[in-house]
Image (cartoon, rainbow, N blue to C red; front, side, top):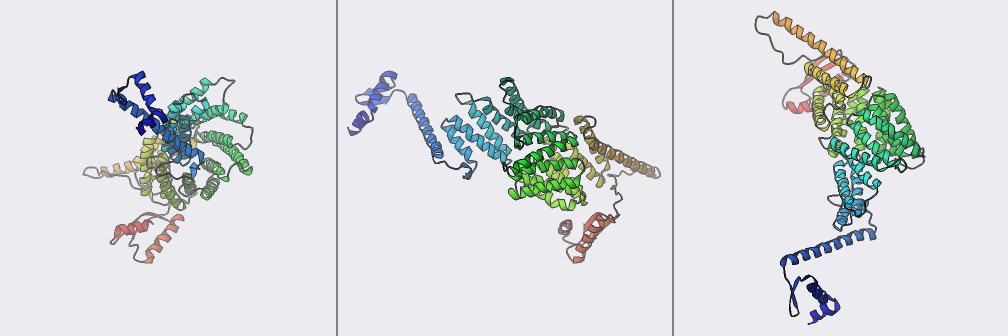
Length: 543
């Protein structure tokens, strides 16, 4: 009786039940007792009540975060970003705007740490939640996550998906804006995002046209002479110029971008870490112009800044380590570059995985350093891994493969495989002609042709020598499985046999031999270790 009285008078529950029974005929009444007529209706109502209750719980969680002003960036959540967790609560509470905001923040955070796979998933989720909003958001809000998604797909070398996303985004921007209402800042962002993708696909002419549209607009709308946004657009255009072979113009634009960033640092609108971007890009341009000392100086500056402000395992630190090693190798200091390149390989392996072009580039630089100190077979192994990654990651006949092929051909020549080296250089020339117009990257093409002619001449000489030798023999011609090593004038060839590890004199002999090699007095062809354990001694000899 007390329960009935409470339900009837205090909570007004029983009158509502009677009202539902009359209106919807969903209850059977026996005296003061009510029961559901159909089990299915009961289950459906129960499910709706549970859903509503669950939404209320998630709204309470979201409200708690907002009311207590919890610093999301300071919270370490096991298994993911706190923004992603809060975004999930917003989604379950059907707060689509809140879910969109939190997933965008999670994507930005993942992108900043080079976790492009996670970032792309977050942006995709954000776009899905945005589509569920009752009021259609403005074009700017729709385009920003789409541009960010396209950028992440580009970094993951998912070029076809990125091109579809960014092309659709640019078309939407052009169709929705009239000349009067054009959001120029957003339009520039869409143009440069697609241009950067074209550059990554080695479509340099298409990229250049987009940048030539975007950069003048950026200059006109940006009044500040220390705008990092303007510097980024100018530098992006300069990178396209560099990769298409217009190095003097690229240098000019990179120096302009560096001046803008320097002013921004002086005005304290950013940290000096921002300068490392320009140092790196300018260093790459100077290296292309064969100004290796200046290039190394720029890369070393970038490394010093990044090492000061970032963790040693950060992706940008690995980039600077990689370019410093490459510059040292170009200066004939490959031995000094090896430890830097090894660190770069390990960091990129950890961050990007073993199937990403960034990891392949680090392997290529390590191979160059190995080759510079005479470890040609180690270099060959690195380059074969590098090319295997590039063949999968890049589209067929991509321009980025050319330097790796040139390195591979050079290493094959040193190991004596002249025929295969010639095939590799022929492919490099074919890819160059498919990607560049006449005069673009002319030095690269000229080097490939020179190497090809030299290899062809040496192979013909070897074949004619073998032919004349077999004519003097009465038995069948002897098949030579591979050509002899191409020993150039690098000193007296020598093969060393050693039982290194027993006495100090063996280590001393290798140190002296290394100095004589740098003086071009000796040319070590091989070091052979003897006495058990030979394999361990071999590892010791290799350092």
